[in-house]
Image (cartoon, helix red, strand yellow):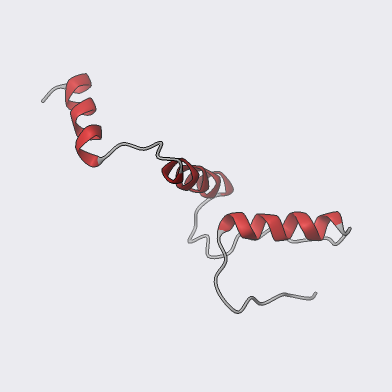
Length: 75
């Protein structure tokens, strides 16, 4: 089995791009997410989605989130 080492950390999105490129070249890839810290693939995808949403400004401040929670659930 061969392995590839990167000189610096890459994001989960970059990791997925590398995997897709290798698979497009018909190279079999063992899909072990880098530094998953026990998180599932679904957890890592959701985190990546949340990062993209934050980049697009699709997020709430902590204060806004608390106000919504208090309004919905009360004290």
